[in-house]
Image (cartoon, rainbow, N blue to C red; front, side, top):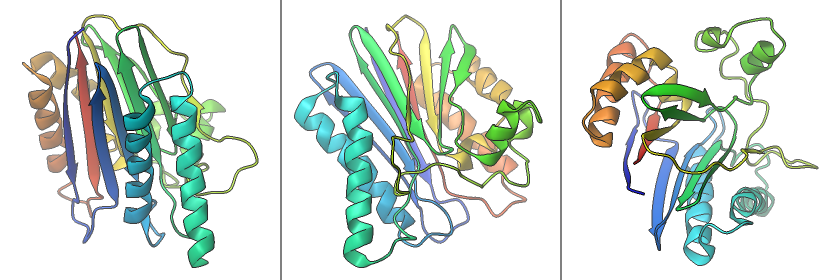
Length: 242
């Protein structure tokens, strides 16, 4: 199994970047994590860094064991809540998170919020994670189509996030799969996937000679499509498995 990857993060037209990305490789096991501090909340950039650092540091200690995915979300949540209590800032320190882990016989991912993971196989889109947002709820109810999410007036209304108190876990963890050749993964904040159609992701994948070129070509499309907007921060991680 050969794994290659590339990471990018851009603050867009904003004064600060509230996205955070990270990765770590240990003994042939890989961890990739991406987070987006929620807009409109102070300390968003701190929250995203906290959950990424928590996930990466836990991976450094334990590797990709059977408890890692759940613990990365649970411990990250605990750290944000502790910070809110310590500083009496209960409306702050909130973030999305997407996590992808790979080892020789297993791939797994999890997410919370509206940052996404996409899976491509043989240069075809297989799936993307379902946002924890109002438009995604409307898609699930059959009221709008998936393609309508990008321009929906309630696009930014998030229903679940790290740093929001929960009585039971609010993150989703996928059923693990086995690695196969010609797999590609994209982890992306909403500032990235909102400005590039799924079809263009596939077109860029088909033309790219490596994962760096894939992300660079998609980034160019995101930038062009964001010219007429007050571009949000945008971040992405691309991973090839061959």
